[in-house]
Image 1 (tube, helix red, strand yellow):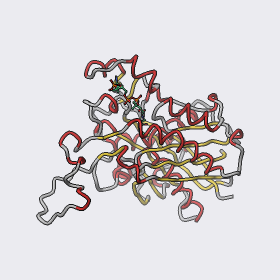
Image 2 (spheres, rainbow, N blue to C red; image 1 turned 90 degrees about the vertical axis):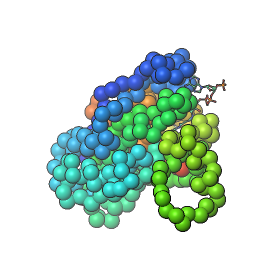
Image 3 (cartoon, rainbow, N blue to C red; image 1 turned 180 degrees about the horizontal axis):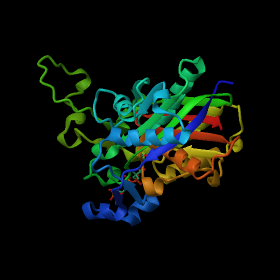
Image 4 (spheres, helix red, strand yellow; image 1 turned 60 degrees about the horizontal axis):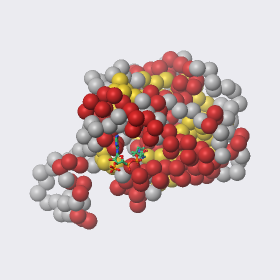
Length: 331
Ligand code: UT7
């Protein structure tokens, strides 16, 4: 069986905490509004460090947990939608910082679904035997894209990183990835090019339309209701498509969902008929850290001894794109 084995996991969380009361100092909002609607009490903000630094710290923690040296990493896949640079890939900066000199490097951006996409790509490489040790780092600094004058979106997001080191294993691995590009305007952050190219035309009014209005130019823009509606069904469908009759949903021991909104998680898992005691969340103290949510949750579960041999674990998420996906593994 062409599966994976998770050798180690780690995470990094910046020190600065913005709780709901801090948001009510800058916006017309309150803990009474935020907590019941989202499940969020606080989020961490990387106020003085770049994204790649968080990723490197999480990567080091995962390598230490696995007891594997950085030079033995064959490939680094970084998932991020908030990179410090358009290029080079953030994986190259992390490679340098952790000393993984032999590793090939590339980044993946499927927004909040990025960890699941990366795991699926890594699984494909491991199945061919091309690489032995693959480090997946999901590192996100949403605070550099969030519009802190928008109370409907800014209260959701935080900064942090999670990482896992994986190798080929002999247990089952099932996955499903999907996307609905038609819905891309529900959640986007436009690339900010200040070009002086004199030969630009304008296909589809792209440069003249709403994407270029000053207040939206550099920031994350979200239609919260549209994303919410999409997310509930997308998460449930992703899990069903991933297991595709190989298991009954009731056999899954732990579900680690993308931590976007506690109500989305509760509705999606209710649709699947999964009892809430099998669903792990840390959204209350972390907020939404995009693709980093799932590996951070996994790392928390692993370090607290709750991952037991033989368990069936389901990772499921959704994000800008709109993308969605799930991976089910046995550990
Ligand atoms: O990784 C994917 C990331 N994105 C998501 O998962 C987003 C999914 N969507 C959501 O989680 C919810 O749509 C939100 C939590 C973002 C918003 O909740 P909602 O129930 O959809 O609120 P809404 O945007 O429809 O706004 C309802 C009211 C509005 O006031 P009026 O027009 O009814 O007077 C908003 O202005 O709530 C107001 N509002 C707020 N009030 C206090 C919106 N945000 C806030 C706020 N504090 N932070």
